Image (tube, rainbow, N blue to C red):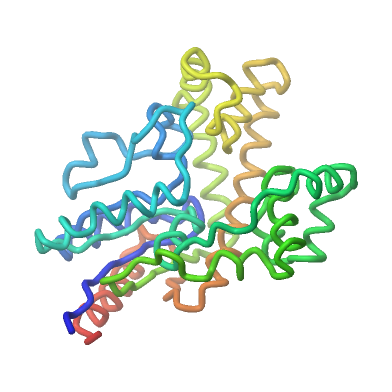
Length: 307
């Protein structure tokens, strides 16, 4: 029986320093980084996704950035297939693959596999669409799913309710059935968990830097290339910038909304990742020397351990 190859995953909320830690660990352990952020796969969406400049993604090598235009779909299944196609070559080069990103569903799709779930039911959706307070209903029927879905995200709320009502089980149970899960690898998942008040202050400052660095101008340019209905325009930062450009929000209000919703998103990310009991949690930012040292110790122990 051949040994399983090692795979490292860096997770945690937005703004916690995942990229910094991944780069430091890649340099320490001769690694290559695979992006696990659902927005950084789109070309041109740079400032609002905190995407590392292309010139800085060469050493250590980075993968899965700028894969498609905004008017094309890129799913969790696409992500899992892309990673699986890259891993054998990275391992064959003697390098350590390091997944880095905050899109928990992408990581779950890769590591545990995806169940196709029940086929959409137009009749059920029509009945649900007539009900008020759908997110409140989801909170009662599937609290874990409701915690991960924004109350205003009607499409995801409808799908989660549909799964719960058609299968009789929570969405997480439906999608954790291990279909096409990654094989041949063992994984160490490190999660960054900075003190909440420091994380929120960092997020507020980062949103301001994005705004001052040209987020509004970047959004205006992208809107000349893609329709406003393209998926990335619904993302944090881009939605507020688009609303500002359309006159629906004044710039100060747009920035304030971006900051508030980014903090809320970070909280939902932590809820998602905390459901994974296999995560090794690091109580700080990925930029802190002591967190780097703790991650190095965990990685060294993991790499020395037998299958």
